[in-house]
Length: 295
Length: 295
Figure 1 (cartoon, rainbow over the protein chains, first blue to last red):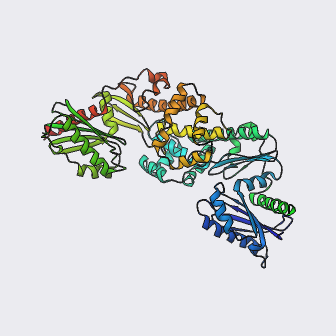
Figure 2: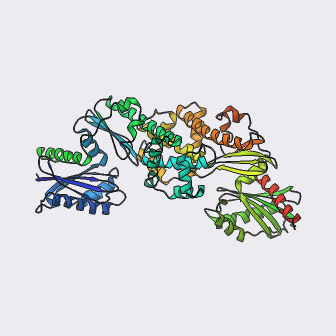
Figure 3: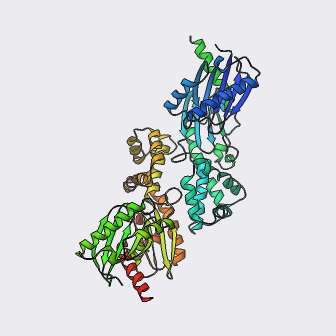
């Protein structure tokens, strides 16, 4: 068995890494750039290796190479088999396993026990573990899913601004400020929306969050609509977990949602036990010690 | 003044034409292919000329060329000035004016009086004329507007199917049949949605309409949600028109919506006086006789 475990948490904006000893104690950490293996696998590979070397360097393990380590990687874009195969064949590690970025987040948040997480960021996905079995809900992307995510909230804010412009719905400080940003020209909003990626829409979500906190009626309605959608997904999670085990919110909107969610969910929320990288370390130890024991 | 008026009703799927005499009496009609001047101006130009020649031929005006006629064209995509200039310079007519396809529809539906139309097709747009002044509401396209349109309804049906797949919302015959069409593989729905144009989503709208007629609870909810959005737009139209004048529904969903709309709107609906092409003829006579008189 390798003496060291590498854990990788790779997403669309950064790649975080940790190196741990045989007991799972973290010795060093690193961080590099984007590592979405679906949209840009070669860049992801470069950033994964860079993050691994940075963690080894941070741990002062100058004589240990990535090739001497086993690695568990939680990666965005892992739901497409071809991308996983392409990357697995090119990784510099002694042995490696790729799982979803959601799975390492779940492991970090709830540990080995049953429990569930809601990742509420630009998109949304819900992951539950019940009697050891994993269940994924949502997470289908901005175009046709990700209800309650920042991109959908931002998109709704732009749509409301057009409705306010046309006098179909009431204006508010939120819609007025968005319209002003586009020179009060609805065609510029349409042009923006036509070219926008989910992250571009998502950049309007903080305006909605702030507006709702300030009592803006449109912003409040959008937050309540979004929270109702998260409530529905959490209801489905609760049917799976029988409302047992830890329930954690993660992601950029994790601090925002609790005050908007239904009481039945809010009372069940708790802080995650640890972060996704810690979850990846734990899974690395489990995975490679188990496979060692099975030999 | 030219002896003949050509009227063109050009949209994304076809280009209809009529030729009328100096009194606005329609002598012949024609029809050719797509003529959206924004997405494909050269094809639009070819189809406009073809439709014009077919109308002249239908009227047995073998010795009259398009160059001998004045023309009024109601065209989709007319809201972008560059496209209008490009097409205007290349039209084969003695003189021509381009207006929106919505304006000729309004003229056809309500004639010269004040009144309003709701065009509820793949997209939605609302046009009111009050005290002679025109007001446009909605119509900003699928990505950020067109609430209540067939594309949005079809999109919602696909989204509901994913929610049903994940157990977040209840399944129904509608969502089950859509999921089966995609081999019960949500990733295939996601792939479809990523590449889909509004018309592709819109092809699912008739399934929702039929499902709602059959009492499918999901389809009924989607139709009621869509109708609530049309109700809101019609409320805004009513504030402009002071609920006076004719109110007509046009477009592919015009026969579907009345039973779902609020009573306050349903009681005000009436059949359009005439079609868009007839509206274009009337506008052609007005436009070119007025400009003649002004010389």
